[in-house]
Image 1: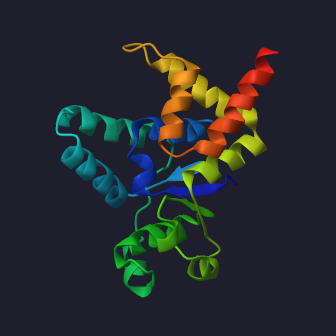
Image 2: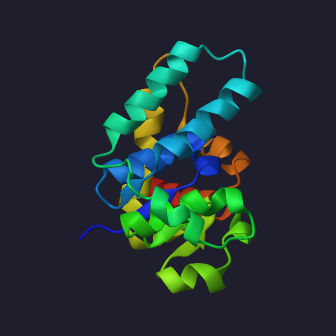
Length: 190
């Protein structure tokens, strides 16, 4: 059985981080999950914060995300929402979806909103994107390095390098993961 993780909206918002997480999931290394409600938040915020982005392209991105990862959408979690306690009531849908999907990890940057004492009751852990990716590197460096290389290869419209992708990931907060990936890259060049 695959290791199930639920991605919160804040880790799906940054383009390069979303790309990395989806490529890790596409490898079969983890079973990534999210909900339409999570995607609504991602794309509502993108439209608000980036009015320069074409709404049709954003709709296409959402469709491509759902098509890219097998069995990614969690449904039927809504009845659990009112039964849950969290510091931010607006985050209960995330925990409810994780419970419904039997996720072991919620990948989020809002760790304080998902206290261990509450998540532990459900056998769920919250991890930052940096800790999640670093754990994946430690388990299978090859998978994560391959995901970064596929990001580079996919950027035909604007050619890029591994160093540029790592820099973008670092700006997204993946400091420990990027340091580990740079060590992997250096070791591979020796």
